[in-house]
Image (tube, rainbow over all chains, first blue to last red; front, side, top):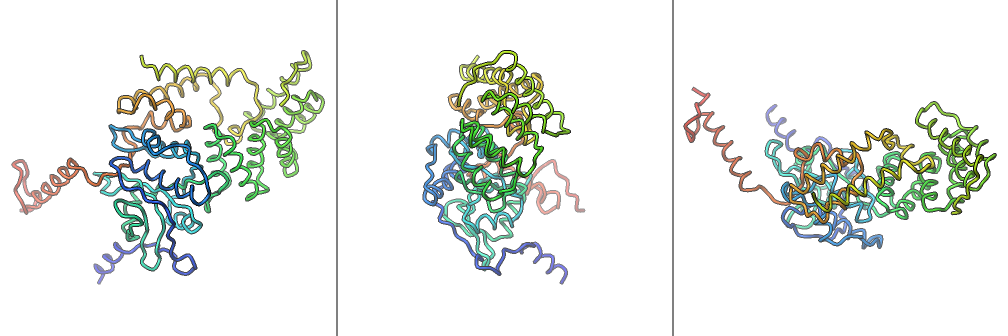
Length: 312
Length: 130
Protein backbone atom coordinates (compact mmCIF):
# COMPACT_ATOMS: atom_id res chain seq x y z
CA UNK A 1 0.00 0.00 0.00
CA UNK A 2 2.73 2.43 1.02
CA UNK A 3 4.74 1.33 -1.99
CA UNK A 4 1.77 1.99 -4.26
CA UNK A 5 1.31 5.45 -2.80
CA UNK A 6 4.99 6.17 -3.19
CA UNK A 7 4.83 5.04 -6.80
CA UNK A 8 1.83 7.23 -7.52
CA UNK A 9 3.58 10.14 -5.86
CA UNK A 10 6.45 9.72 -8.26
CA UNK A 11 4.26 9.75 -11.32
CA UNK A 12 1.76 12.51 -10.72
CA UNK A 13 2.68 16.11 -10.22
CA UNK A 14 2.47 17.66 -6.78
CA UNK A 15 1.26 20.83 -8.41
CA UNK A 16 -1.39 19.97 -11.01
CA UNK A 17 -2.34 22.40 -13.75
CA UNK A 18 -5.37 24.56 -12.89
CA UNK A 19 -8.66 23.05 -14.06
CA UNK A 20 -11.14 25.35 -12.46
CA UNK A 21 -11.14 28.36 -14.74
CA UNK A 22 -11.92 29.13 -18.34
CA UNK A 23 -8.27 28.83 -19.35
CA UNK A 24 -7.97 25.16 -18.43
CA UNK A 25 -6.31 24.56 -21.74
CA UNK A 26 -4.22 26.86 -23.90
CA UNK A 27 -2.68 26.24 -27.30
CA UNK A 28 -0.86 29.19 -28.83
CA UNK A 29 -0.44 29.37 -32.56
CA UNK A 30 3.36 29.34 -32.63
CA UNK A 31 4.87 28.57 -36.06
CA UNK A 32 6.93 25.37 -36.00
CA UNK A 33 10.56 25.07 -37.09
CA UNK A 34 11.80 21.50 -37.47
CA UNK A 35 14.84 20.60 -35.32
CA UNK A 36 18.26 21.35 -36.78
CA UNK A 37 21.27 19.81 -35.12
CA UNK A 38 22.68 21.94 -32.26
CA UNK A 39 20.54 24.98 -33.17
CA UNK A 40 17.56 24.62 -30.84
CA UNK A 41 18.20 28.03 -29.24
CA UNK A 42 18.17 29.80 -32.58
CA UNK A 43 15.10 27.85 -33.71
CA UNK A 44 13.28 28.61 -30.46
CA UNK A 45 13.94 32.35 -30.86
CA UNK A 46 12.81 32.15 -34.49
CA UNK A 47 9.58 30.34 -33.62
CA UNK A 48 8.58 32.78 -30.88
CA UNK A 49 9.65 35.78 -33.00
CA UNK A 50 7.46 34.73 -35.91
CA UNK A 51 4.56 34.19 -33.49
CA UNK A 52 4.86 37.86 -32.50
CA UNK A 53 5.37 38.90 -36.10
CA UNK A 54 1.87 37.58 -36.81
CA UNK A 55 0.28 38.65 -33.49
CA UNK A 56 1.79 42.09 -33.05
CA UNK A 57 3.30 42.98 -36.43
CA UNK A 58 6.83 43.30 -35.05
CA UNK A 59 9.57 42.76 -37.58
CA UNK A 60 12.42 40.59 -36.29
CA UNK A 61 15.75 42.33 -36.90
CA UNK A 62 17.81 39.23 -37.67
CA UNK A 63 17.49 36.43 -40.19
CA UNK A 64 17.56 32.79 -39.11
CA UNK A 65 21.14 32.53 -40.38
CA UNK A 66 22.16 35.54 -38.28
CA UNK A 67 20.46 34.04 -35.23
CA UNK A 68 22.32 30.77 -35.86
CA UNK A 69 25.69 32.49 -36.04
CA UNK A 70 24.96 34.52 -32.90
CA UNK A 71 23.96 31.59 -30.73
CA UNK A 72 26.01 28.49 -31.53
CA UNK A 73 29.34 27.71 -29.84
CA UNK A 74 30.56 24.90 -32.10
CA UNK A 75 32.79 23.19 -29.58
CA UNK A 76 30.09 23.15 -26.92
CA UNK A 77 27.60 21.99 -29.50
CA UNK A 78 24.93 24.32 -28.20
CA UNK A 79 23.95 27.72 -26.85
CA UNK A 80 24.47 29.39 -23.46
CA UNK A 81 21.41 30.86 -21.72
CA UNK A 82 23.03 34.30 -21.67
CA UNK A 83 23.57 34.19 -25.41
CA UNK A 84 20.02 33.06 -26.08
CA UNK A 85 18.83 36.14 -24.19
CA UNK A 86 21.35 38.45 -25.86
CA UNK A 87 20.46 37.18 -29.34
CA UNK A 88 16.74 37.57 -28.66
CA UNK A 89 17.36 41.17 -27.57
CA UNK A 90 19.40 41.80 -30.70
CA UNK A 91 16.39 40.49 -32.60
CA UNK A 92 14.36 43.39 -31.14
CA UNK A 93 12.59 41.67 -28.27
CA UNK A 94 12.37 42.31 -24.57
CA UNK A 95 13.60 39.24 -22.68
CA UNK A 96 12.17 38.53 -19.24
CA UNK A 97 13.27 35.58 -17.13
CA UNK A 98 10.35 34.03 -15.27
CA UNK A 99 10.17 32.99 -11.63
CA UNK A 100 11.17 29.33 -11.53
CA UNK A 101 7.76 27.73 -11.07
CA UNK A 102 4.94 26.20 -13.10
CA UNK A 103 2.47 28.90 -11.99
CA UNK A 104 4.49 31.61 -13.74
CA UNK A 105 4.68 29.45 -16.88
CA UNK A 106 0.90 28.89 -16.85
CA UNK A 107 0.21 32.58 -16.18
CA UNK A 108 2.25 33.67 -19.19
CA UNK A 109 0.74 31.05 -21.51
CA UNK A 110 -2.75 32.06 -20.37
CA UNK A 111 -2.26 35.61 -21.64
CA UNK A 112 -0.75 34.44 -24.93
CA UNK A 113 2.98 34.63 -24.18
CA UNK A 114 4.95 31.57 -25.35
CA UNK A 115 7.82 30.60 -23.02
CA UNK A 116 11.24 29.26 -24.03
CA UNK A 117 12.44 26.75 -21.45
CA UNK A 118 15.75 25.00 -20.86
CA UNK A 119 15.44 21.33 -19.93
CA UNK A 120 17.84 18.50 -19.31
CA UNK A 121 16.48 15.52 -21.21
CA UNK A 122 18.74 13.08 -19.39
CA UNK A 123 20.17 12.69 -15.87
CA UNK A 124 22.19 15.35 -14.14
CA UNK A 125 25.33 13.21 -14.43
CA UNK A 126 24.95 12.83 -18.21
CA UNK A 127 23.16 16.03 -19.20
CA UNK A 128 21.46 16.56 -22.54
CA UNK A 129 20.49 20.24 -22.45
CA UNK A 130 17.74 21.39 -24.75
CA UNK A 131 15.72 24.55 -25.42
CA UNK A 132 12.12 24.40 -26.56
CA UNK A 133 9.24 26.85 -26.80
CA UNK A 134 6.30 25.88 -24.61
CA UNK A 135 3.16 26.62 -26.61
CA UNK A 136 0.40 25.65 -24.21
CA UNK A 137 -0.99 23.16 -21.75
CA UNK A 138 -3.98 20.92 -21.27
CA UNK A 139 -5.24 20.72 -17.70
CA UNK A 140 -7.73 17.96 -18.57
CA UNK A 141 -4.93 15.68 -19.76
CA UNK A 142 -2.32 17.24 -17.41
CA UNK A 143 0.11 17.75 -20.28
CA UNK A 144 2.42 20.54 -21.38
CA UNK A 145 2.48 21.38 -25.09
CA UNK A 146 5.75 22.34 -26.72
CA UNK A 147 7.62 22.29 -30.02
CA UNK A 148 9.96 19.87 -28.32
CA UNK A 149 11.39 17.93 -31.25
CA UNK A 150 9.98 16.55 -34.52
CA UNK A 151 6.34 17.14 -33.71
CA UNK A 152 4.55 20.48 -33.32
CA UNK A 153 2.75 21.02 -30.00
CA UNK A 154 3.96 17.68 -28.64
CA UNK A 155 2.06 16.83 -25.46
CA UNK A 156 4.48 15.93 -22.65
CA UNK A 157 2.98 14.59 -19.40
CA UNK A 158 3.26 17.26 -16.71
CA UNK A 159 5.26 15.02 -14.37
CA UNK A 160 7.85 14.31 -17.08
CA UNK A 161 8.03 17.97 -18.03
CA UNK A 162 8.57 18.99 -14.41
CA UNK A 163 11.28 16.35 -13.96
CA UNK A 164 13.34 17.49 -16.96
CA UNK A 165 12.65 21.18 -16.27
CA UNK A 166 13.65 20.87 -12.60
CA UNK A 167 17.20 20.02 -13.72
CA UNK A 168 17.69 23.51 -15.18
CA UNK A 169 16.28 25.09 -11.99
CA UNK A 170 13.12 25.69 -14.04
CA UNK A 171 14.72 28.21 -16.37
CA UNK A 172 12.28 29.95 -18.68
CA UNK A 173 12.06 33.26 -20.55
CA UNK A 174 9.38 35.15 -22.43
CA UNK A 175 10.31 37.17 -25.52
CA UNK A 176 7.96 40.13 -25.88
CA UNK A 177 7.60 42.91 -28.43
CA UNK A 178 8.47 46.36 -27.04
CA UNK A 179 5.48 47.78 -25.16
CA UNK A 180 4.22 44.45 -23.84
CA UNK A 181 4.59 43.45 -20.20
CA UNK A 182 4.82 39.88 -18.85
CA UNK A 183 1.79 38.72 -16.84
CA UNK A 184 4.04 37.87 -13.91
CA UNK A 185 6.31 40.93 -14.10
CA UNK A 186 7.45 42.89 -11.06
CA UNK A 187 8.21 46.57 -11.75
CA UNK A 188 11.87 46.44 -10.69
CA UNK A 189 12.76 43.32 -12.67
CA UNK A 190 10.87 44.54 -15.72
CA UNK A 191 12.74 47.84 -15.49
CA UNK A 192 16.10 46.03 -15.53
CA UNK A 193 15.06 44.09 -18.63
CA UNK A 194 13.99 47.23 -20.47
CA UNK A 195 17.24 48.87 -19.45
CA UNK A 196 19.17 45.97 -21.02
CA UNK A 197 17.28 46.69 -24.24
CA UNK A 198 18.07 50.40 -23.95
CA UNK A 199 21.77 49.74 -23.34
CA UNK A 200 21.95 47.55 -26.42
CA UNK A 201 21.05 50.64 -28.45
CA UNK A 202 17.31 50.10 -28.95
CA UNK A 203 16.20 53.43 -27.52
CA UNK A 204 12.82 53.67 -29.26
CA UNK A 205 11.95 50.11 -28.29
CA UNK A 206 12.95 50.77 -24.70
CA UNK A 207 10.89 53.97 -24.65
CA UNK A 208 7.79 52.02 -25.72
CA UNK A 209 8.31 49.55 -22.89
CA UNK A 210 8.96 52.23 -20.27
CA UNK A 211 5.77 53.99 -21.38
CA UNK A 212 3.77 50.77 -21.07
CA UNK A 213 5.25 50.23 -17.62
CA UNK A 214 4.32 53.74 -16.50
CA UNK A 215 0.74 53.01 -17.54
CA UNK A 216 0.69 49.73 -15.65
CA UNK A 217 2.43 51.12 -12.53
CA UNK A 218 1.61 54.86 -12.69
CA UNK A 219 2.88 55.68 -9.19
CA UNK A 220 6.21 53.91 -9.52
CA UNK A 221 8.97 56.48 -9.11
CA UNK A 222 11.70 54.26 -10.55
CA UNK A 223 9.79 53.71 -13.79
CA UNK A 224 9.07 57.43 -14.16
CA UNK A 225 12.77 58.11 -13.65
CA UNK A 226 13.85 55.55 -16.26
CA UNK A 227 11.23 56.92 -18.66
CA UNK A 228 12.51 60.45 -18.06
CA UNK A 229 16.05 59.32 -18.77
CA UNK A 230 14.95 57.56 -21.94
CA UNK A 231 13.37 60.81 -23.16
CA UNK A 232 16.56 62.65 -22.18
CA UNK A 233 18.60 60.14 -24.16
CA UNK A 234 16.41 60.85 -27.19
CA UNK A 235 16.91 64.62 -26.66
CA UNK A 236 13.25 65.18 -25.74
CA UNK A 237 14.03 67.42 -22.79
CA UNK A 238 10.52 68.74 -22.21
CA UNK A 239 9.13 65.24 -21.93
CA UNK A 240 12.03 64.27 -19.67
CA UNK A 241 11.33 67.26 -17.43
CA UNK A 242 7.65 66.34 -17.26
CA UNK A 243 8.55 62.86 -15.94
CA UNK A 244 11.02 64.15 -13.34
CA UNK A 245 8.34 66.64 -12.15
CA UNK A 246 5.86 63.79 -11.82
CA UNK A 247 8.35 62.11 -9.49
CA UNK A 248 8.57 65.22 -7.30
CA UNK A 249 4.80 65.14 -7.03
CA UNK A 250 5.14 61.68 -5.45
CA UNK A 251 8.43 62.25 -3.62
CA UNK A 252 9.36 65.92 -3.25
CA UNK A 253 12.98 65.35 -2.15
CA UNK A 254 13.88 62.60 -4.64
CA UNK A 255 17.60 63.27 -5.24
CA UNK A 256 17.92 61.60 -8.64
CA UNK A 257 14.96 63.47 -10.16
CA UNK A 258 16.12 66.76 -8.61
CA UNK A 259 19.64 66.21 -9.92
CA UNK A 260 18.43 65.63 -13.46
CA UNK A 261 16.04 68.59 -13.32
CA UNK A 262 18.98 70.70 -12.14
CA UNK A 263 21.00 69.39 -15.07
CA UNK A 264 18.26 70.42 -17.50
CA UNK A 265 18.06 73.89 -15.92
CA UNK A 266 21.83 74.14 -16.21
CA UNK A 267 21.65 73.29 -19.90
CA UNK A 268 19.08 76.03 -20.31
CA UNK A 269 21.46 78.47 -18.56
CA UNK A 270 19.22 78.84 -15.48
CA UNK A 271 21.93 78.48 -12.87
CA UNK A 272 19.96 79.83 -9.87
CA UNK A 273 17.12 77.44 -10.55
CA UNK A 274 19.56 74.55 -10.94
CA UNK A 275 21.16 75.30 -7.59
CA UNK A 276 17.89 75.65 -5.72
CA UNK A 277 16.71 72.31 -7.14
CA UNK A 278 19.90 70.61 -5.94
CA UNK A 279 19.45 72.11 -2.48
CA UNK A 280 16.09 70.39 -2.12
CA UNK A 281 17.61 66.93 -2.62
CA UNK A 282 17.91 64.65 0.41
CA UNK A 283 19.97 61.47 0.44
CA UNK A 284 22.04 59.23 2.73
CA UNK A 285 23.51 57.34 -0.20
CA UNK A 286 27.19 58.13 -0.82
CA UNK A 287 27.00 57.28 -4.53
CA UNK A 288 24.02 59.59 -5.05
CA UNK A 289 25.71 62.30 -2.98
CA UNK A 290 28.65 62.05 -5.39
CA UNK A 291 26.33 62.56 -8.35
CA UNK A 292 24.80 65.65 -6.70
CA UNK A 293 28.26 67.04 -6.00
CA UNK A 294 29.33 66.50 -9.61
CA UNK A 295 26.32 68.53 -10.77
CA UNK A 296 27.11 71.21 -8.19
CA UNK A 297 30.62 71.48 -9.63
CA UNK A 298 29.18 71.76 -13.13
CA UNK A 299 27.06 74.68 -11.98
CA UNK A 300 30.13 76.37 -10.43
CA UNK A 301 32.09 75.84 -13.63
CA UNK A 302 29.27 77.39 -15.66
CA UNK A 303 29.28 80.36 -13.30
CA UNK A 304 32.99 81.00 -13.77
CA UNK A 305 33.05 80.52 -17.51
CA UNK A 306 29.61 80.44 -19.09
CA UNK A 307 29.63 77.82 -21.82
CA UNK A 308 27.35 77.77 -24.76
CA UNK A 309 25.37 74.65 -24.11
CA UNK A 310 24.20 72.50 -26.90
CA UNK A 311 20.53 73.08 -27.41
CA UNK A 312 18.59 69.89 -27.77
CA UNK B 1 47.08 39.26 -32.84
CA UNK B 2 43.66 39.17 -34.32
CA UNK B 3 41.81 41.84 -36.20
CA UNK B 4 38.47 41.48 -34.43
CA UNK B 5 40.23 41.58 -31.09
CA UNK B 6 41.98 44.77 -32.11
CA UNK B 7 38.67 46.40 -33.00
CA UNK B 8 37.17 45.19 -29.75
CA UNK B 9 39.98 46.70 -27.68
CA UNK B 10 39.62 49.95 -29.55
CA UNK B 11 35.87 50.15 -29.01
CA UNK B 12 36.26 49.30 -25.32
CA UNK B 13 38.96 51.86 -24.70
CA UNK B 14 36.92 54.47 -26.53
CA UNK B 15 33.90 53.82 -24.28
CA UNK B 16 36.19 53.88 -21.25
CA UNK B 17 37.40 57.36 -22.08
CA UNK B 18 33.91 58.51 -22.97
CA UNK B 19 32.64 57.44 -19.55
CA UNK B 20 35.41 59.33 -17.80
CA UNK B 21 35.16 62.60 -19.62
CA UNK B 22 31.40 63.14 -19.84
CA UNK B 23 29.62 64.81 -16.96
CA UNK B 24 26.29 63.03 -17.02
CA UNK B 25 22.82 63.15 -15.60
CA UNK B 26 22.05 60.54 -12.95
CA UNK B 27 21.56 57.48 -15.11
CA UNK B 28 19.10 54.63 -14.82
CA UNK B 29 22.18 52.57 -13.95
CA UNK B 30 22.60 54.63 -10.77
CA UNK B 31 19.02 53.82 -9.85
CA UNK B 32 19.28 50.10 -10.50
CA UNK B 33 22.29 49.82 -8.20
CA UNK B 34 24.48 47.88 -10.64
CA UNK B 35 26.21 51.19 -11.23
CA UNK B 36 29.12 51.57 -13.57
CA UNK B 37 32.38 50.56 -11.92
CA UNK B 38 33.88 53.47 -10.03
CA UNK B 39 37.55 52.67 -10.25
CA UNK B 40 39.46 52.32 -13.48
CA UNK B 41 40.74 49.00 -12.11
CA UNK B 42 37.19 47.62 -12.24
CA UNK B 43 36.81 48.91 -15.77
CA UNK B 44 40.02 47.24 -16.83
CA UNK B 45 38.83 44.04 -15.20
CA UNK B 46 35.62 44.10 -17.23
CA UNK B 47 37.50 44.78 -20.43
CA UNK B 48 39.69 41.80 -19.65
CA UNK B 49 36.58 39.64 -19.15
CA UNK B 50 35.36 40.60 -22.59
CA UNK B 51 38.73 39.84 -24.11
CA UNK B 52 38.73 36.50 -22.32
CA UNK B 53 35.33 35.70 -23.76
CA UNK B 54 36.56 36.68 -27.24
CA UNK B 55 39.56 34.38 -26.87
CA UNK B 56 37.50 31.46 -25.57
CA UNK B 57 34.90 31.90 -28.30
CA UNK B 58 37.63 31.79 -30.91
CA UNK B 59 39.08 28.64 -29.38
CA UNK B 60 35.64 27.07 -29.33
CA UNK B 61 35.16 27.59 -33.03
CA UNK B 62 32.90 30.66 -33.13
CA UNK B 63 33.13 32.57 -36.41
CA UNK B 64 35.58 35.46 -35.68
CA UNK B 65 33.46 37.85 -37.78
CA UNK B 66 30.56 37.60 -35.35
CA UNK B 67 32.43 37.44 -32.02
CA UNK B 68 32.48 41.21 -31.61
CA UNK B 69 28.72 41.60 -32.13
CA UNK B 70 28.01 38.72 -29.77
CA UNK B 71 30.11 40.18 -26.98
CA UNK B 72 28.78 43.68 -27.54
CA UNK B 73 25.25 42.46 -26.86
CA UNK B 74 26.19 41.14 -23.40
CA UNK B 75 26.07 43.20 -20.23
CA UNK B 76 29.25 43.48 -18.14
CA UNK B 77 27.91 40.99 -15.62
CA UNK B 78 27.01 38.54 -18.36
CA UNK B 79 30.43 38.80 -20.00
CA UNK B 80 32.13 38.23 -16.64
CA UNK B 81 29.97 35.20 -15.95
CA UNK B 82 30.78 33.66 -19.31
CA UNK B 83 34.49 34.42 -18.96
CA UNK B 84 34.58 32.57 -15.65
CA UNK B 85 32.18 29.72 -16.19
CA UNK B 86 32.03 28.94 -19.90
CA UNK B 87 33.23 25.37 -19.33
CA UNK B 88 30.53 24.51 -16.84
CA UNK B 89 27.54 26.52 -18.09
CA UNK B 90 24.88 24.40 -19.78
CA UNK B 91 24.59 24.71 -23.54
CA UNK B 92 21.22 23.71 -24.91
CA UNK B 93 21.40 21.61 -28.07
CA UNK B 94 18.95 19.78 -30.25
CA UNK B 95 20.38 16.33 -30.48
CA UNK B 96 18.89 13.48 -28.53
CA UNK B 97 21.48 11.29 -26.87
CA UNK B 98 24.87 11.27 -28.59
CA UNK B 99 26.73 8.06 -29.42
CA UNK B 100 29.40 8.79 -26.82
CA UNK B 101 26.71 9.54 -24.26
CA UNK B 102 25.04 6.24 -25.07
CA UNK B 103 28.34 4.35 -24.74
CA UNK B 104 29.03 5.95 -21.36
CA UNK B 105 25.49 5.13 -20.30
CA UNK B 106 25.81 1.48 -21.30
CA UNK B 107 29.19 1.29 -19.58
CA UNK B 108 27.69 2.54 -16.33
CA UNK B 109 24.70 0.22 -16.55
CA UNK B 110 26.99 -2.77 -17.12
CA UNK B 111 29.26 -1.62 -14.30
CA UNK B 112 26.30 -1.53 -11.95
CA UNK B 113 25.04 -4.93 -13.06
CA UNK B 114 28.60 -6.29 -12.61
CA UNK B 115 28.72 -4.87 -9.12
CA UNK B 116 25.34 -6.38 -8.35
CA UNK B 117 26.63 -9.73 -9.54
CA UNK B 118 24.11 -10.02 -12.33
CA UNK B 119 26.79 -9.80 -15.04
CA UNK B 120 30.57 -10.24 -15.23
CA UNK B 121 31.47 -8.10 -18.23
CA UNK B 122 34.61 -6.38 -16.95
CA UNK B 123 37.73 -8.02 -15.57
CA UNK B 124 38.28 -5.38 -12.93
CA UNK B 125 34.92 -5.58 -11.17
CA UNK B 126 34.17 -7.62 -8.09
CA UNK B 127 30.56 -8.18 -7.19
CA UNK B 128 29.52 -6.57 -3.94
CA UNK B 129 26.74 -9.15 -3.56
CA UNK B 130 28.20 -12.46 -2.23
